[in-house]
Image (tube, rainbow, N blue to C red):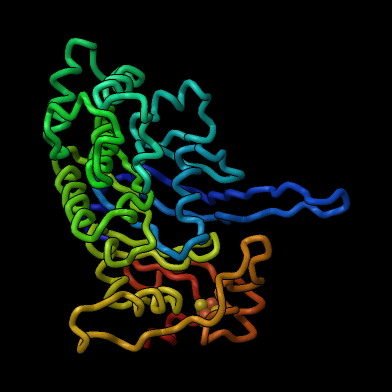
Length: 332
Ligand code: SF4
């Protein structure tokens, strides 16, 4: 973490957050099944930074974003925005702070109303959050279109008239329309072609500076994460296994799972390719996560201790924390 960030107060604090989902019983005598999608995670998000959450499908990264926004009500734990508890807020209080925390999803088409023009959508977003009086909104909409690289006449069009990259630009404009401080980007560029993806990532970086934004960037793609992040948090089966500055994590990963993920990143210069670490088996079901270290069923270094005792997240190096009993030995 840079010195600048440490000196700032966190904008968002996630404290022992748990998100469990109870599955419907298939038969009368079946016992209740609980999916522990997020199982007691802690982290801070600092103003102006981009913190990325990475991990395989089902690790809990998107669920974390949804729980912060209360799209799914957290089962336990707290989320503080500027010190105020989001889970404890009434619906009305939450609506008032919602403008401060916006989200951009993977599929912009699904989150844009097909029956509304871009003008109607932007106007409505500003009206709901009461960001500007009606007579000032037109100028703001034109400014937003310029910021996201879309022509002003596109305001009259409907979502189906745009390409995937353009729709994502509209999603970004709609998020910006309400003057947010935090934007949660949930796999926001995953569905885009490589060249369009690079354009949207560069646009996000540019807008971050212009609007003083803080990003929580959720992605399974480590090449993208390397490009956009200041810090990176790695999740596995609902737990945080490593969190660090980007450079420290990519140069010297400490957790065996992070090492395996990084070894799979494609490289253009084959002389720089390290040994690929292939993990055995699939990610276990979050319905019955392994006892002890959740990664032990796939970890090449697992011992009896790993099978019995869950490792806690400890700061092993400056601003670099890891949850592994043997991280020190494995890194030397
Ligand atoms: Fe592997 Fe054990 Fe470390 Fe878990 S605690 S990552 S099983 S060495």
